[in-house]
Length: 234
Ligand code: ATP
Image 1: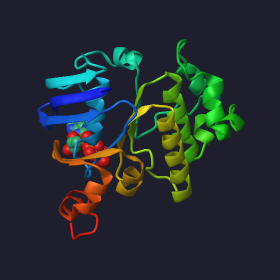
Image 2 (image 1 turned 30 degrees about the vertical axis):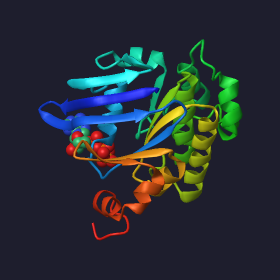
Image 3 (image 1 turned 45 degrees about the vertical axis):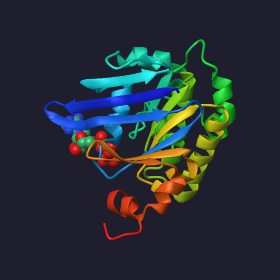
């Protein structure tokens, strides 16, 4: 087990967002986290990375409790997040964006990362702001890989991308899975997530309302209609 979230409660100020939320990611698994806008998906990722630490519960990473650790220490342990906003440095070049994230002992050195993203190699000297949305997403993933993560947290990687580019992002996620990177994938695009995931959680109001396989979720018309707005009147 690479990640085990056990009964966490997370707040923004007085706003109680996550309620006794538990989920697991096994070694090498891709786990999808789905739910409507505001359900608490990003807050779950921020709880894991230490940006918004939970007030209650445990977050075990490779068996040790990391809840309450500083974000930089959690990152050093091997957890990387690709935020929804991508957060690449728009006035730095692709090469500089990647160099900043470099870590000496990472199994993903610059050359390895560029082999995986040939379009970034072609644009090494371009500034972040000159890239297309798809290239920016690739750069955000590539930058996360530079830190050598064993667990990658992806927040809506398909957002704002054209269907063809979404397919390229999906191929990347599949390849990373083959290389045994475990992933927790937050998506609004349920179809994309269900094609990639080994297991899936649906959350609503900060609580898990479904846990199972993609096939199990597809078969559950009640959950898909109520919480994902798919195939029903919700
Ligand atoms: P979305 O797809 O809209 O990002 P989400 O499932 O990721 O949805 P979260 O971003 O985790 O949802 O937000 C959960 C709840 O927390 C929402 O009600 C949101 O308004 C609230 N929230 C998010 N960020 C903050 C913040 N910085 N301060 C206060 N409340 C926040």
